[in-house]
Length: 375
Image (cartoon, rainbow, N blue to C red; front, side, top):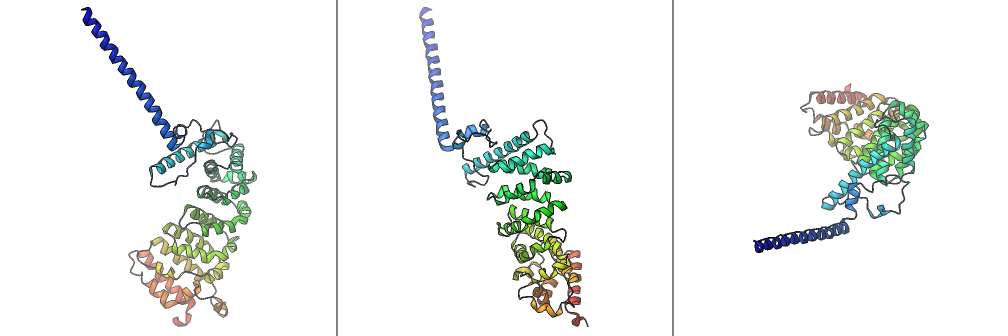
């Protein structure tokens, strides 16, 4: 029995020793793998865990290890595994930034509507911060509050209009889009419009030169549409009407509809009729009249033409009609036979309302521009 007991203890000792050796091996291997991952992906684990995420505030010391963490925009390295991780980190960072901005502005409340004191803190962040994800989060909070009528006056009185407008100079498309959204919400106010008019030329240039169908372009078009709801500032866009028609012809459905809303505002103002008719339009404009085109696009474009027809005094301006250059919208309408062929080509459209609008438009066009034909 003594010999068997000794054998058992020896066996147990060997098993325990082997287990301890295996644990040490696993720990050593795990540390080595972590070091390799850290070398490949930077401080990934630290960043994703959020341990270092106190750098949302510009008051932090930039000399810490946060400089070793590269901030990737959401579109970084699309189509790769690294890009997927980068976008995930960016989304997580943006979420934490929004929470941190809300906490700084209103530490004891989770309400969306902020007080004047809290709005002042948000504006300070927008003015002082240089970090894109902090600016994005602060502008989102500001835009949400600018959607309320009572906050539009408060933000203006706090000096918010020039602070937000200054962000339009950024090259970051996401931040610029958010700034345009804030200004768009603020522009639903007569006094704000009066102060924002000085930025209309910049917004117009940025909108026209932005990437076609981009979020920045659409946000700019929405702001310009709001600024032209009344006739007061429409003349400031007179030199850009040709560019808007170009965007309309080249853009996707969403861009087309947004441009049409802007053109409808201008076409309702008789004082802008000559500027619209003088605008150069792409030769492809007529090709939009087809059965495949979106119904709403066709109807809105016909309304623009009808308003022009109604507001422009053809008889009084007959002597000056030769001032319209070739390729202008005037010549597009003047080429009655060509225009008629293209427009009448959709009389067989499956939608009854489109048929009615087409017939109404052609009758008005013939009555105003070609009265002798009617006789």
